[in-house]
Image (cartoon, rainbow, N blue to C red):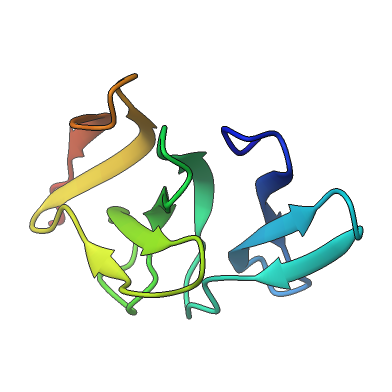
Length: 111
């Protein structure tokens, strides 16, 4: 739920098991996709000011099995990767002031 209580951010899988992040505006019951990635975007979390959403996924077609934490504007502006490399990042959450993120990391070793 957005900080002002007007919009819900959620993720949804399609028939091909790829996911995207959507916004549902409660007043109009209007749904809008904000990611449209090639991978599985999920776990959206609003910034305390309601301007940005972080999520985990593969929004830019990265390495299979390695999720990245991304940030995107609530208006779909400025998608950027916040993590990268040989890690699997998930479960992003903002601190109450919006100055830091907490997320889980897992090393991924391929043989």
